[in-house]
Image 1 (cartoon, protein in one colour):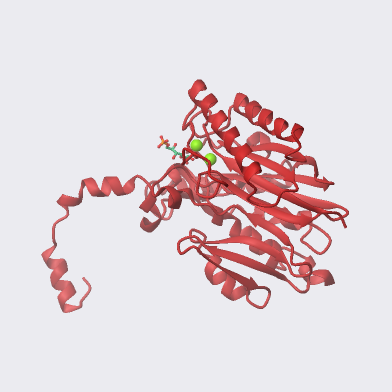
Image 2 (spheres, helix red, strand yellow):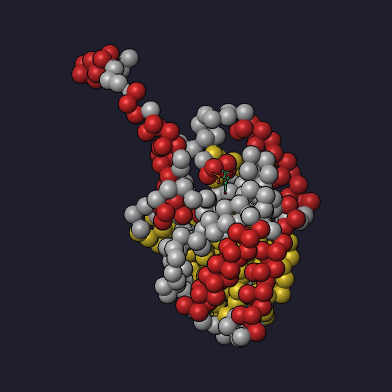
Length: 379
Ligand code: F6R
Ligand code: MG
Ligand code: MG
């Protein structure tokens, strides 16, 4: 057994090229510069700068624990610097996820999203880092459930005695700011009652019961809740440790062969299929979508990130992409109608309430409606 390593994935959209479709190469270079400096200074052991759509993600290893001031500060400074460059290049939505002027200790509530975990590096430590664009943190609920709780996905739950005990899953309630831990498999039905509503209930942590250590972590920030209005989607990230009593790499990736429906497409206001793509295909251009996910595979060695392997750059995901395109056609044909458009409650943080308000005075009492209510009858 090795020593404790922290894996931090810290992401933000600080300017898109073109529109909200991709990151600009010069922005990427700037991010690399900052990360290289942090490595040279000994702050991080290793790094990889990833991207998905218009979001950049710092994938970092270090020994400083989660929510470390210096780690968060260096990424904050990098995002600020990248924002200046975005302004200079006239990129779209420059500084979009920078919601505060001053850094105060860590990134909580500041705009950037992050997922971090501390663990003892095993002799061989395969990890998959997922980055998504045009969706929200609850998008990970269904894939995580399948990885850690569903024997139809994860054969190890049935044929590996090391997995019989199941996993503990922490669910966060993003509206009430509460959390709960479900013990699976005994509580999978209760778990599903909540995580089936991914706009509010999000799987934050998966714990390995054998060690009490984290097996998976997601980012749970909802920018709309932080800012009180639509400021771009929350484009989540996730890290999953694999193998040896945890789901195998293939069991971790397989859930994405089904491009499930997620919220966040076009103006953060539509449902669309989550399409698994390679790093060369992470540019959502059709109706600003459909939502994308990339999977970066690493082996960790003494904190060094040996990788990435571009895991969805594989023919076995071609069909998922084809299905996602067909689903996109089908949903798009609904235009502004639900369920392509999100339900009204979820539109609360978008620009729609302004439209509704502008027509407020023209909504007058409907006598027939009132009478029906009094008599308790439906018309
Ligand atoms: C951004 C996104 C986009 C934008 C849309 C309108 O992540 O999902 O669909 O919401 O392009 O953007 P604005 O309002 O910035 O012109
Ligand atoms: Mg953007
Ligand atoms: Mg984005």
